[in-house]
Image (cartoon, rainbow, N blue to C red; front, side, top):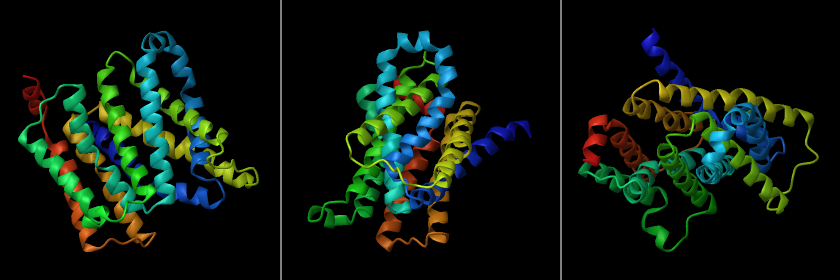
Length: 293
C-alpha cells in the first residue's frame, strides 16, 4: 500500500484540479469575478505559505531575481488560467492549456540547451496541429481566436516557463518557489484591481466570501500540496501520466455536468494534444540523459 500512496495522492490532486472549474464558476455566479476571485483565493493561500517563506527568507533573498521571475510567470499562469476557466468553455480552455509539451520542449531547447529528439518533434507537431484544429482550422486566418482562447494559450506558456525556472533553480526549496508563485498571483491580481481592469465586488454576500475562503483553504491547498508531494515521491514519467488525469477529468465532468460539447474537428484536435502530452510523459529518465550527452 505504501508504494501506491503517492499515486493515490497525485491522482486525487489531479482530479481536484480537473474539477476546479465547478467551485470557480459557482463562486463567480455569486458575484465575485475572475480577477477578484484570484486575488482573494491566492491571497489566502499565500498567507498560509508565509511562515515557510519567512523561515527560508535568507535563501529566498539570495535568489531574489529567480524568485521574482517565478512570481511573475507562475503568478501570471495561475491568474490567466483561473480567469479563462471561469469565463470560457471548460473543455476548450483545458485543451488549449495542455499545449504545455510545445512550450516545454521549445523552452528547454532555447534556455536549457536540451536536444529535441524525433519523438519530441512528433509531440510538438501533434500539439500544434491539435491547437490549429481546436481554434477553427483554416478559419483562424480570417477570424481571430477569442481573447479567452488567447488567455488559455498564454496560461500554458507561462506555466511552462515557470516549470523551466523550477528546474533551473534547484538550490531553492520547492516550498519557497510555490510561495513566490502564490504571492505573484495575489500581487498581479491586486495591481489589475487597482488599475480598475475589473471592479472589486463590494456588494456580494458573506456566503460568497465564505465559499471563496473554503475553496482556497481546502480545495486549492489540498490540490497544490497533493500534486507537489506526489510528484516528488515518484518517477517523473509516471507522475506526468497521472497528471493528465486533470485534463480527462475536466473534459468528462464538463460534458456530464455543464453539457459542453465539441464537434468532430475539435475532438480530433483534443486527441492530438492529449497524444502530445502522453509522448512527453512516457519519455524515460534515460531519454533525458541522452539529450544532454
